[in-house]
Length: 451
Ligand SMILES: NC(=O)c1ccc[n+]([C@@H]2O[C@H](COP(=O)([O-])OP(=O)(O)OC[C@H]3O[C@@H](n4cnc5c(N)ncnc54)[C@H](O)[C@@H]3O)[C@@H](O)[C@H]2O)c1
Ligand SMILES: [Zn+2]
Ligand SMILES: [Zn+2]
Image 1 (cartoon, rainbow, N blue to C red):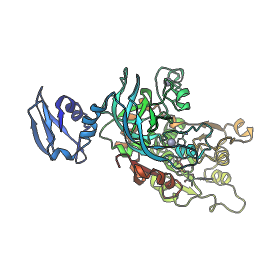
Image 2 (cartoon, protein in one colour):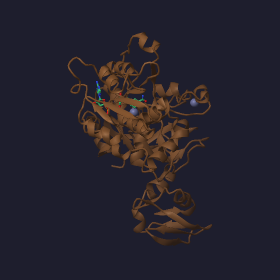
Image 3 (cartoon, rainbow, N blue to C red):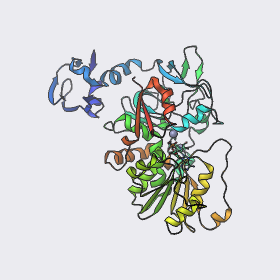
Image 4 (cartoon, helix red, strand yellow):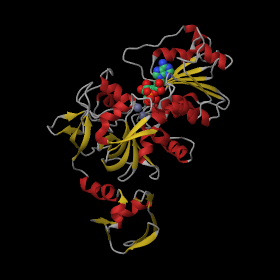
């Protein structure tokens, strides 16, 4: 196999080529030859081409990222995907065709994806906006295979995270400085199509397959709008950072951005899944004085403490006769909490979370997604007396401008991410990964698209 040096050098420079898990470094790069440190030894490449020796076959990603990719540019790619043909039915793992990206679109080779509750929610059929057949998945990472005309924010070979909350920087929402919700692709994203109104996916029968949340990570290749993708530090492991595509970012951002928890604040988090535990770590990083986790599953107790909780309350076991969870929390915090977070999606829990807030200033943030048609309620007096009810999508994080900071927090050990990967499976076991979600011992199952 032959790889041209001009193609390889930029990839070496940004660390995209790994040798035994470590990025290769380039010592010297001249016009037509260069010295590359490979496995601790310098190798000199003096011709315009680099030939793959047996040593090089161990260079992860070299072939697929930089050789095959260029050969697929501009052409449809046939690859494996998990298709959701109908609500309530398992996904069908089959070969599909992914068209090349059009203008302002990016085709990504997805390396890893996790399954989030929103995928299960849509697949179950209770999501009123769910449409089929479609390619689900929105928590994923990969490498840019090719880009359409006019794409400037990412380039071939970049390590990227797909963003279900786009950031165009130009719309009313983006320019407001008040929200991370972007209006640029909202209408077409909701309909499961690309911004030009068409799909880039079809099955072997030629039937179009819909996109999902602007990401569709349950496919070895996907096409997204350029506003829905962010390039990240290639040194960050792609399997771990796939989780920054949804759950971890959502919880962490809700604490540090939406609520903006400050040192000394008291916090209660209802629901200790990936989202809730990420709220916990956000609150901890801000120096909250008390972080109380409320969960009905005792298996979440140890995890809660590991992520930074100071207290754990199981409302099914830890309340006195006739005591409510709201009374218990108010008693534990001398009048209520500065911030509470719903990470369950249960509308009764949302009410408890609001009412456990301190009179005058307590704020409750709704993160959980409730069932279709469900409504929240409380006595208006709760708000009249100064409690605030808010919501948060993707943790209030602007994916393109703020993801780099989260990756740094992860790399500096401030943000735990690896700890959420409780299960790993080959992509072909994706239906089992949906099953894993129902078990208390699972935070996230990461699927390897290469398997
Ligand atoms: N707003 C957003 O942008 C966004 C993004 C991602 C996920 N979500 C939503 O956030 C929620 C949490 O996601 P997750 O992945 O952490 O889910 P998860 O199922 O892993 O965790 C939910 C936790 O809540 C606990 N729980 C359930 N009922 C409870 C009750 N009555 N009282 C206390 N605890 C209870 C469960 O035991 C579990 O530990 C889901 O509703 C999900 O759809 C929202
Ligand atoms: Zn999600
Ligand atoms: Zn915008």
